[in-house]
Length: 295
Image (cartoon, rainbow, N blue to C red; front, side, top):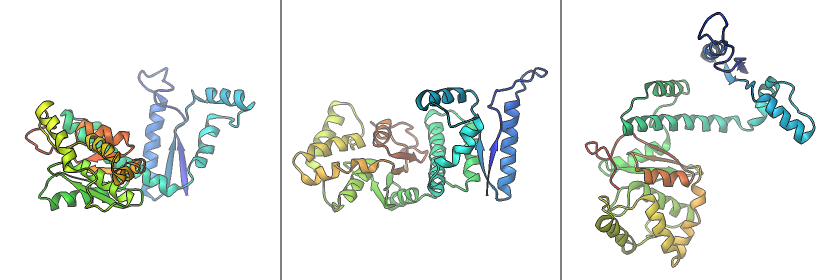
C-alpha cells in the first residue's frame, strides 16, 4: 500500500493576517514531513505531492488551446490522479533515485573540500536522505572496484566505470595516462571487443602531446587527461580500425557511473559530463598538501 501526502499549499503561501511571518503553507509542509516519517517508521510507503496552484491555469489553458478541452478538473486531478501513469517500472525508478542521492552527497562533500566553505545544512539534509534510504558511502560496486584497484597499486589514484550491463572496468594512474583516462580507454576496448592488452594509441603518439604540455604550455602533469586521450584516439582512428571501433563506442558510455578515488580536475569532470556519464569522487586530493590540481 502507498499513501500520497498532499500538503495542500506551496511553501510561502497563505500568510496569516494576524501573525507576521507565519505561512500556512510552510506549516503544512512541516506536518507533511512529520507524517511521512511516522508512516514510514511503520513500514508504510509514502509519496509526497505538492500542488502547484499557480501553474494549473496555464496548463489548463494550453490543453484547451491545443486539444479543445482539458483532461484535468483541478490541480489535484492534474498531479495526484495522474502521477501513477508516469512510473512504468517502480524498481528502476527507486534504484535511480538511490543512485542520485549518493551522487549528490558526494558532490556536496567534494564542493566543501574544494571551496573550503561548509554547507552543513545541505550536508545534513543529504545525510538524512542517505540514512532513510539505507545508503552508505563505498557500497556501490563501482566504488568498491575503484578502491580495490587503488589499494592494489599502493594507494595510487584509480577510477572505475560501471557499464550498462553491470560490468565494472577500472583504470590506474600510469606514466602516460591518468586513472580516469585509463579507465575510459579500457571501457571502450571492452565495449568494442578489443583485448585489454592492445594499445589503441601508441606511446609514440602520446609522448609528443606530453612534450607540448610540459615544455611549451607550462603544464606540470605530463599524463593525458580524458579529453586529450580522446583527441589522440580520434587521430589514431584515421589509420587504425581498432581505434575507430573504440571511438564508435563512445555513445554507449552515456548513463554510466564513474567513480574516482581522488578529486578530478575541471577538465576531466567536464569531459565526462559531456559524454553523459555520472561522476562521483572521493573528497580527497591526490596530494593533500598541494590542495590543487596539476594541469
